[in-house]
Amino acid sequence: MACIIDGKALAAEIKRNLKKDAEEFETRYGRKITLAVILVGENPASCVYVNNKVKAAEFVGIKSLSFRLPESATERDVEQVVKSLAADKSVDGILVQLPLPKHINEEKILSLVPPEKDVDGFTAENVGNTTLFKEGINSCTPAGIIYMLKSINAPLCGKHAVVIGRSNIVGKPVAMLLLKENCTITVCHSKTENLGEITRQADILIAAVGKPRFVKADMVKDGAIVIDVGINRTESGLCGDVDFDGVKDKASYISPVPGGVGPMTIATLMQNVYKCAVRRENAGL
Ligand code: NDP
Image (cartoon, rainbow, N blue to C red; front, side):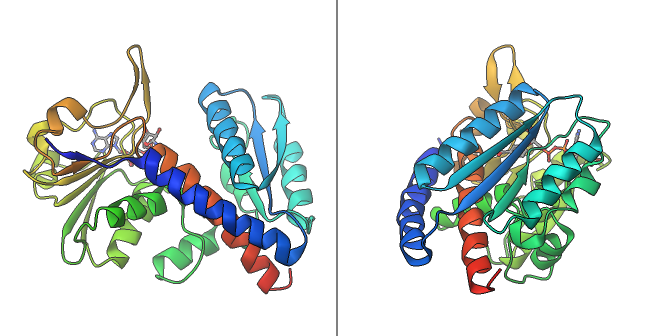
């Protein structure tokens, strides 16, 4: 039976430490770190994520400003909110909860977030820095995954990491961060042939597919470390992209859903907000 990587406990530890850092920041700079969160529409999953992010900010001592726009909001409405937050010196971080309604161009909206306030690490500059292995704001979920792997002292150097999924928010950036850690990387996607043959070679297997229990035990090498990014809402409740019950007897470590990558994403988001605030103060912005 695999050891469980307890993302909830790790995230709680990160947030406890950040609480002290945020207090020190306030004492030093005479102001609270401030995060602006924009939610457009009423997508139930997005509402839950936003509420969890606001709650985490409150715990850490980060002030959060919520901007909730109706589903009918125009692209221009959203643009105006982002632009005014970009210009507001008291705001350290801007988070636009994705997905945006279909009539709004996500890329265009995200491009309005200044890189120094881009707490999600989605702007071209921050993605570029991740790819160049430069200091910057890394995307939250991938950064959380690396933290989880380091927390178990997983040997990364020279190991084969297989990522299933190539999205801009998980698959691609986690592949870059693993490459930075000297893993050998294979990125798989919906057009990949002989997927199981590839995943069975993985020392570290990251599943970011968005399909309930997609990764079965016969796709996993004995002793592999398996990180399940998926959050799928099924009739029987939340589940990941990994068939946990089957895979747990084969893997050496496995992250559960819920209680794995999800809480880590929020904790690393809080780290990014803190990082943005410090960097803005240091840059005199
Ligand atoms: P996307 O839908 O953007 O990407 C899914 C990826 O999986 C795509 O690259 C797709 O390939 C690939 N894929 C789909 N079907 C297959 C298949 N049969 N074989 C191999 N690859 C396949 O999803 P995200 O990356 O945004 O999210 C993935 C999952 O992670 C979701 O469940 C999401 O809810 C969850 N998530 C969880 C987070 C957390 O904090 N825990 C944060 C973000 C996401 P192709 O590119 O060819 O279409």
